Image 1: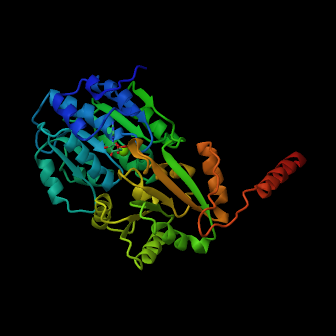
Image 2 (image 1 turned 120 degrees about the vertical axis):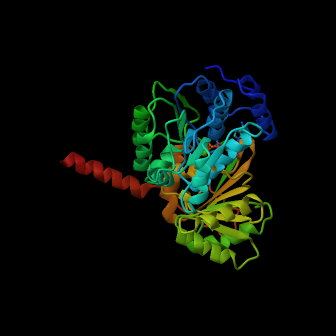
Image 3 (image 1 turned 180 degrees about the vertical axis):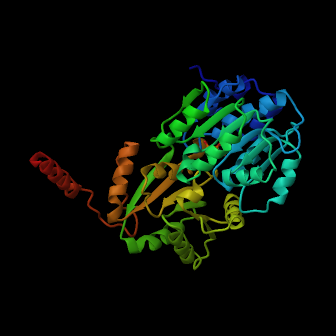
Length: 404
Ligand code: ADP
Ligand code: MG
């Protein structure tokens, strides 16, 4: 397929192109280059590309263009497009992106999600919208109370479909889909394609164009990856010593559980380092405030769990630190993809204790890379990377199979 190298080569309104330029976008990313033309032509699309690859603009730009080509007054409670997003933070970011790209055009947008009061959302829906961004639960709630009418719907986007599945929202998503009119243009975006999402897409999309860019098992080249092996009890000390270096300007730190996150915060609060945590135990307001302060550079360390951080667009992260290695090797790619974005270089550091070596090995297998351990740190501990023990087990299994 011929790929478009300049935004100006898309048939987009001059006002949209100007916003894209003002946002500092140089060239379309691969998912945008391949996804925008078929969406402009009215085709259904299945877009598969990893976090940070610019999927939002891949659907927002052509939808804005098409809405703007045929301006329409939408009746109260109606909306011309619906974007489903798994989390409040992402939904908010998507609506903001629509606002940014569509500045100067006369399009009405709103976002609805749980955890905040309904009335302002109901008021926004009353106006009739061009763009509605929503999380599934609150959308269903507002629909059931009669505040939404889908009969004018022209565009439906299911964003971050794999994350919907991971978070247990697939049933709600299906309920929403059942409410929508048959005739519409549908776009589905996902970082990975688990079986359940593949199935859903087959039912949902009509004769879609499938655009799949750089498989989710590749790590952006501009990210420098370091492995620090150490004793478990030394993790907080190593963290403190790393943070003495001012080059660790804005650090996204991942850990396994919300309790772990809180413990790290307790430790950091004894130092002058400004920090905050985002996880499922925090209220919406607290999470949003933490994210905002982090983006504004007011806090240096943001501690997060995988679910709280996935998909969130945080620019300018200087370092990602894996305080714990993720159980799912794909999470490793998602996590470290938060640094080294849009061509910038970034550093990803993973703490690894003896019991995590197997996790590191499965990450290496997925990303097809060998990790070398960095011993230039004060708490370095030699850890054996030999896998003789597990090899022995395998042989035993084989032997027992033969005997049977
Ligand atoms: P995804 O949904 O694939 O995870 P996003 O749509 O959130 O990715 O985009 C990630 C970041 O890249 C955002 O900050 C966005 O503004 C930026 N971005 C998107 N497209 C481009 C582009 N063509 N050039 C530069 N930056 C871009
Ligand atoms: Mg996204």
